[in-house]
Amino acid sequence: MVKRSHGYRVGSRKLMTKNPRKRGLPSLGRLLRTYEKGQRVEIIIDPSVHGGQPHRRFHGRVGIIKARRGNAYEVTATLGKREKLLIIRPEHFRPYSGDQPK
Image (cartoon, rainbow, N blue to C red; front, side, top):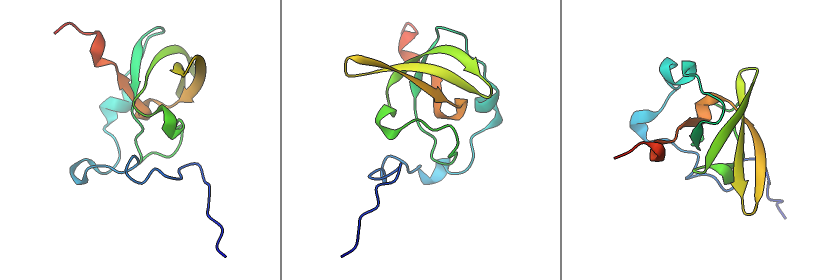
């Protein structure tokens, strides 16, 4: 009998794939953008960068920047009734566009 693997990215085949036109590493502008404390961000995992990824259950959620930690940021996101503290590198989130007036 074969034992099934239960790794960190298990069950994420569709979630962790990019559109063929967007494959490759992210642009420098995305990496060099700075974020302020209290700013809202969308957590969108970039599968081409493995370091600093949050767990896949946070993909698509909105978080709030709490602090900077080295090359990464501390982001709080709600999961059910609880608030979780995530340490994420900036490749895996972008500014939240829902705050801007239409």
